[in-house]
Image (tube, rainbow, N blue to C red; front, side):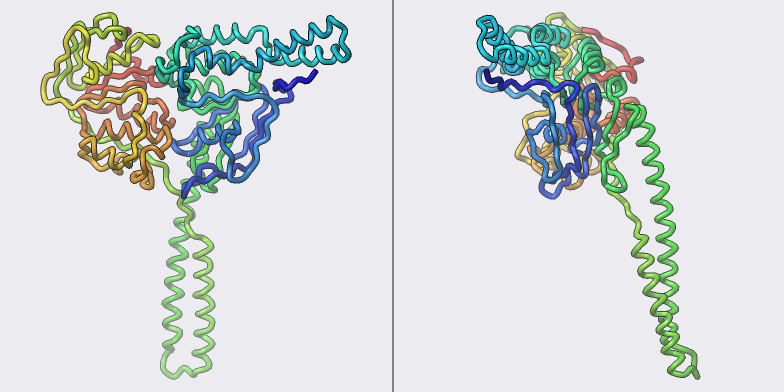
Length: 525
């Protein structure tokens, strides 16, 4: 009896990447990346948006081939991308069935092997032993229960007949994540897994990842998740030798190691600069002496003049070689978000607003000049709906919304709009920009005239933030503002929110950001 089931390797599982390189156009995405993932190890991938974090996940999963380098896989793996796309009339049940197909195949094979064993067929004992091993490796009997428990804990849709097209991006992601957590893979590759989770879902995910015997590789901007889960960190941000850095001792080791690396980099650069200036001065002196060598004092014979000139030429060339050998190597500095000064003005007043099917309970609030408000609540409570009403993007079914004063509102939705054919610069200008896009420090110069559809998810999110600030708004309405943003940018954004004169209303599941705004007025839906 043949058995084509893919069996988890468990303790023998290994996922090894060696010297990975990948270039897209003129952009070097991955350069010299290497890592080894074993059962129970938990890797965090960090770096600025567009540095290749999601690309590395796809290379590890085998859905994208590198230009050079190797990936060796022993065992099964599951990949959760940032967005689960819909296909036709696919349902929640279809996603579950697809993820558990191998599990169910293992159980059917075991049943067939048991029947063959009962009838005494030749080779039945070996076939049954192999089928039993496959089912046990998958922990197949509990797989459906594990998925159901994960769906409930993550606040995901549990109706298996529900079409995926009827679900939000976040709801579809939660279904996919629950399936992976229940499937029993050797490796879990997760791209921004906390983006669509509420507090209960975050606690559940953290607990499961800490307890799993699977190897975990996660891309995340969630500093709390990295601190709680990651045992190793690979940083894809630029370094002085242009190679990624691997840090042990989890997120704390990364923070300390990265800071020390940056300090050494700055110190070595200052030393190089000083040596370069010294050699430039030495070369200038040698050049002056070379000129003088060809203009000797009167009475000096030709032989002495030629000897003196030849020696000075050698000295000059030696100084040139020394200068070339000690050139200052200045890698491209990382972007730093530079928010514009925002004005204060006007107010927004909501009176008993509701929206059928989305915001069932009436809400009243006043957002005055420089106000602060953190909107909280479980998934589905209506946080995004309320923020869209505040921003004037949705009209309430009942109640009233009014504004006072000449009010400009900047609105950051939870997800980016569909990628445009227009360039980033064109999209920004179309928003009525009053400040140059370059001045914000959100996109690299080479990205400004690139079509938006060619930008990574994180870069598109940066463009969303730029568009938000384009007209220097009086009110910032932010729905999960840290989604898809890098850790340094999240820190810069948090600092900017604390100091701006504009009013700010936000909803966030980012646990570190929630701590940072813990003293803000609070509205729970």
